[in-house]
Amino acid sequence: MTKSSLLLSLLLVAGGLQAQDQAPDLDKAKQVVDSICAACHGPDGNSPLAANPKLAGQIPEYLYKQLREYKSWDGNPAVRTNAVMNAMVAGLDDATMRALAAYFAAQELKPETAQNLETIELGRDIWRGGIAAKGVPACAACHGPAGSGMPAQYPRIAGQFADYTFDQLKQFRDGVRDNDPNQMMRMIALKMTDAEMKAVSDYAAGLR
Image 1 (tube, rainbow, N blue to C red):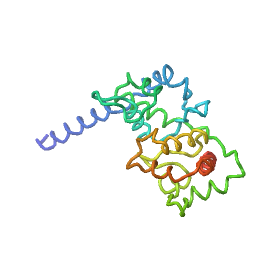
Image 2: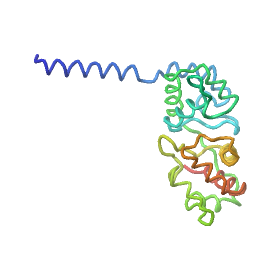
Image 3: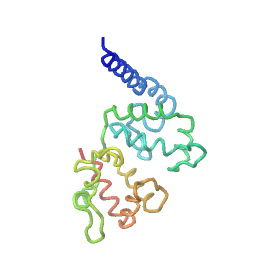
Image 4: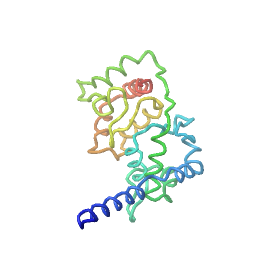
């Protein structure tokens, strides 16, 4: 074997070992889910309560980003503040967060449905075309026409609890949640009324 061939073989082996090391430990993730996450989000990421988001089928990069931002790193405060979640992730390392994100992303979402037929047209119009008079862009521009999201910054919203989506919009508007890139969601939510937020949240719940 020539030196160049030997070097190539060693690089391939090293790369394979590195890939194995980086592969998410889904068995460990399942243990963490059963002991920590399932009570609020369900064992398969389909939360039984609207106060807690459905995580099943969510974009893994987005889930990982949120988990990291709930935790304090190197003595710095958490980017995203929530007393329950801050406590839940305190003992998780980076590899476990990646594994949890991969685990929940692989689960099948049991979607919600739109409930308010009286606002379905308003919700659809905001989702597809925004609110031009207020400078509100279409939700579909970032979250996709079907609400499936775009890695890694824009989550899947289709099938999510309408109440949860509405609550997040209010938190962005009120500055309670401020981990959106470039303040994008905060600027959008500031321009929307509660009625508009509720309408588009309900519409998104019915997207597939």
